[in-house]
Image (cartoon, rainbow, N blue to C red; front, side, top):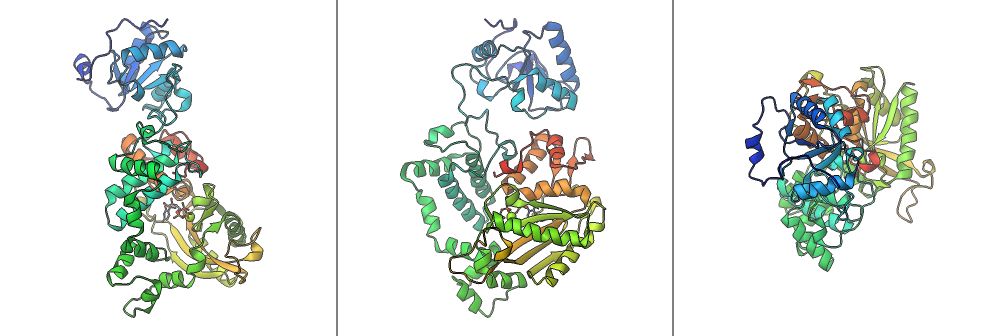
Length: 497
Ligand code: UTP
Ligand code: MG
């Protein structure tokens, strides 16, 4: 039987503990409240560790209450520990992290609460084991969830994405993001949800999301989603934004002019199409068709050969959706650079030159670098980073692709047009650029949000800045960045949030 330390029982939520333990000077981590279990640890070691943690800015409570967020124990008898915890703090136990001493030592070494990893957890061995979808296992941040390309809740996430897009067209950022977050949480679940009650402990699911979900689970579709899908404005904006170079603003302008189809847009003399949109219409059939993995590999070989012909020390990395293991994508994304700083600046222009000579460049929008180290860190995230980049349309031949092109039956041209993006950061920015371009967009958003809110750091495609230490943190690999953020490393194939 587990013997609790001789301490009063848990108190109710009216913050009595704060009265007993006045807020100390030098508290650095307001949202983390530790409790060290005395059993096995012993009174003097507990007292020593308490002082140590407090000296590093941690809040350590002497009393176990519902306010505690992290319980640390050296006791290996999990069942008796859990039984005792359940008696003391039955209400808030599901929200507490019950941790092995290794989490505490890691945190002391780092001087901050490190991210909780599976190895730190003392597993609950009581009969009522939390379901895999309970709050203790699903984080509100996509960068703390593992999301493969296998989506077990597609029927729900497709509906959420329609709603998110519709809000985006109406410039309602809040609800748009809420549905994107909800879709992302469901994508990470290991199985299909059957009943809305199963989502009780999941983060990021509000009343509206749950109502839509309930309708879909019951009837197979939701009225609100059906209404959007049949709405003329939504359909037209979807159609126009599917053209390369046409964003929501342009699509809205055309819609307001009464245009409803491509033929109407192309016939309207008052509309001036820019070069990108002209190419978008010209190659519409090809570039609105998904790019296959085999086609992405073929393009990799073509670009690899070209950059190495320019400079033998070129570094090429496949990034974007294909790096995350997707079978199909809307484009193929690459990072190219060279180890010698500054030399990367001439790389894209030379590559473009070469592809032109090879006769495979159908469209090119090159943007020179505007990267300026002295302007970092950037407080506001910009959709585009400052590295040199180019948005291309390349001509890919059937003979270059293993198993042939992914084209419509009866298409006998023997080639297709494919969208390719290339970005060229200086080598010392490679890891940040790779992390930023590997995506998914939701994974990136949550990495930045996690860095800002949980670590007081600023992350973007260029750098990671620690606001507490007021310094930039260097990284040569993605793993370095996850480590700086105190996050468990997530492989690209698990970033399909
Ligand atoms: P994509 O739009 O290519 O998305 O951007 P994807 O994940 O590869 O999926 P597909 O292509 O639709 O199949 C890839 C990543 O690059 C980032 C985006 O945020 C995304 O995570 N990106 C893109 C930038 O960081 N900066 C840019 O200027 C463009
Ligand atoms: Mg892509």
